[in-house]
Structure formats: structure tokens, C-alpha cells
Image (cartoon, rainbow over all chains, first blue to last red; front, side):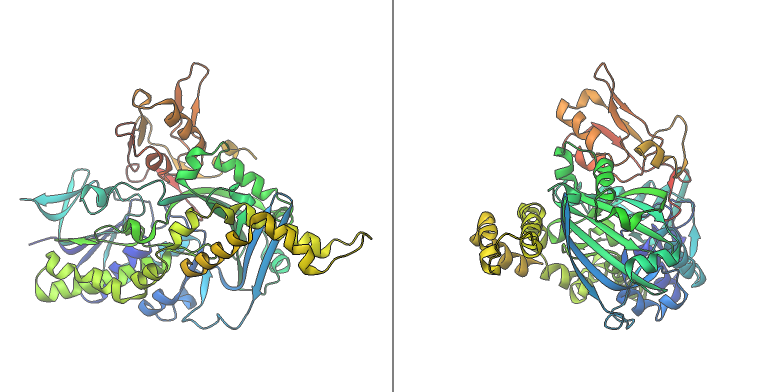
Length: 429
Length: 93
């Protein structure tokens, strides 16, 4: 008789959601977290799209420690001395819980979700590190952590992007530098009222801003700025492949980004209180591992369930959904008394039928497009800056029609390139 | 603010004498050494005046970037998560 029906490794969003759902259904569940408390090893940019957690815990945002609800979406293209921003402000269109998104800070948010799993009846142990899977005659029967051995019918690996256990189990290969990006982030404290005034927000309302061009110094990646209740998240994400060849270190690029004339006034007077870094699995379907084996499931970032579309990045809503669907699969396995891959493979089918793999399939060409269109990170931000300079520069020299102003600038990049990238981009993103 | 000052704001519990990352320079070419010095977001890899790779484990943000950047060189890095209750503890994340 196993100690538990299920052992979940990692109390992030995927792991805690799975533990919550399984415990609620009456299964005996052990949730292991290597941090002192859930969330202390985790980092987000970041924004959580709430729809998938809403399905698990309806009305979660009423009780969960969310920071601000996003009402302002900004996408910027930056050169060294300019910033062109599209700013979409709507306090109403994304207000409904079915599509609302929130800034969150993981230390607090993950601890809350893990406590919900605990309330639902699962055993939460932290800090506890699972070193390896426990096998008997080749069959996975639990996990080993230090001197301890714990047994279960099924192990759910939700141990994050660096899932060493997923690799050991043979479900996934080593990460490729082309498939993951490294993010570095500062938490910058500012009073609530200052944030409201600076970004045109009311209490509880938030802004998300992604930046292309200057922040990544032309490399594949970009900058981000999110508003929390009383702090800002300012950071950079760049693929490990490009960073490996960079002449400038990531923290130095982040310094330059913060000192940019368009960013500096936004963060003026803010107090740096934390500096963090994390990997983001951005390879999409190309890096999709085997999601299940006998007595084993792979969830969230560990399974590479994440999408970078350039204008938005999604990982946490996929993680929550994967936890939910993994739990449904385990509940079915428990009913049937069969924890082999015959039943557990249903996890992948559930992901295929849900938005998770549907959306990743829809946007399957996004990673390739983003990585192979370097103009997005250099020429196009420069073009936007040049066009707007021409439009708004009034110095007494004879003016020209818009078309005449823009044509020579566009031809510098190449009409064909622009059309080609435009078509490819709109088909991939 | 330089990177050392930034890291000093974070909460760490250092596992003295038991580093979770051990680099082996003898299994690296010069390109790999250069990569380590540039990819680490905490700037923990440096090269001393004699060309020796120096790694400072205190301050590690546990991102795994060095691991992935050197994935093509088996044995160049021993990389593990810190033992339970050690390493970085993000207060915000």
C-alpha cells in the first residue's frame, strides 16, 4: 500500500492547482516544495491571465493576493534615444473574471494557492527536496529526498523549468539555449498614489508594458514593465543562445534599460528591493516533452507549457490548466485503479482538447518567427522612430506629404522585407 | 547600483562548503568560459588575472542559465538545485 495516491513535486501554480483538485476529490496527496515556503523560488514578469484559475477557484481574485487588474496594455518599440508606444486603455473590456488578468508576485501568490491545497486536505511539506524518483523493478513508486523515501501510485513533476527529475525520468531532454530565455527583474518600490498618477491608473488598476528593440540590444528578447500595488517590475528577457554570444552582461543591459530616457522618469524615486532571475521556456511545441509515462506526469514549466507572442507572454495560465487537467487524469486513474500510461496518457488528450495545446498549436510558428526575424529587434524600432521624427519635426524647412516622408525610410528597410515580415508575423503570432 | 549591491538586497541562505554548482574549467574551451562570464544574470562567473575561472556561489539566483548555456559540454558544470532550505529566497518573486 503506497503512502499516498499522489505525490506532487513543486508547489508552484501547476503543482498546487493539481494538489488542490486531487485533494478536493478525496485523494490522498503529498505536495513537496523545496523552498521554505511555496513561491520563494519562483519568479514571474508578471501577469497572470485569470481564466484557468477562475475555473478551479471561481472568484479567486476576491481572496487571492493579486496586485492589480490590468486595464492598460502598452507595446513599445525603442531605440537608444526614442520610444514609440501603442497604449490601449480600457477599464471595462477586460473587466470580466473570464478574461481579466492580474499582476502577481509569486512569493505571496504561490503561498496562498498552496494554502488552498492544504485546506482542501493535501499534506504540504516545505522545505523538502525530491532528489530522485523511487523505483521498484523499474516501476516508479515514489520519490527519494535525502534519507526519506515516500511512495505513491503516481508522481506529478511540477518542479519548474529546470526539471532535473523530468530529465532523469527520460520524459524530457536537456533544454536547448534556443528554446529558453533568461529573464532578470527588479522590484522597484513606489507609493501606490505615485504609481496611479504616473501610469494613469485608479486604485487596483494596473498596466502591462512590453518593449522591443533597445532593451535587448537587438538580440532576441525584450523588456517589460508591470505595475504592482506598491511596486514596479522592470526586467529583460533574452534567449540564452543570444545571451551566450553577447558582449554585454544581462545586468548591464538592464541598467541601460532603466536609464533610458523613456523609462527613467517612470521609475524615478523608486527603491530597489529585490533582484531576481529565471528561465522562461519559449520553445513552444518544438520543445514539448513526453507528458506522461507509467505512474508519472509532467506539468507547467517543467513541461515547457508557455507561449511568447512578442506582445504578450503566457505561462502561468497554462500551468494552472495543466495542474487542473493532470488532476482530472489522476482522479480517473484512481477510479479505474490503473495508474499506467494507458490512463495517464489521457492527460495529453485533455491538454490537446483544452486551450493549452490548442493555443500552442495555433501559435506554433511564433518561436521560429521571433528568433528568425532580427529586424523586429533593430530595424523596425528604428523605422518607427524615424517615421515619427519626420511627422513631428517642424523646423521651418519646407514640409513634405506623409507619403514622401515615409517612403524613403521604409525603402531603407525594404518594402519586401516589411511586407514579408508583416505577413509572416501576422500568421505566426 | 552595481550587481553586487543588488544581490545584497536579496535573502540568501548559503550552504557553506556544499555548493550546488561546481564548474570544471578543464572540460571547457575558452568560448565556454567567456559564455559563463556573460550569461549569468548575477555576474557570479569571473576570470582572474591568471585566466582561472572563479565562481561565487553565494548570490546564485538559481535560474539555470549557465547549465543551459553549457549543455553542449557534458561534465563542464555540475548543476543541482540547492538542498532544501538553502539558496535564494525571493520575498517578492
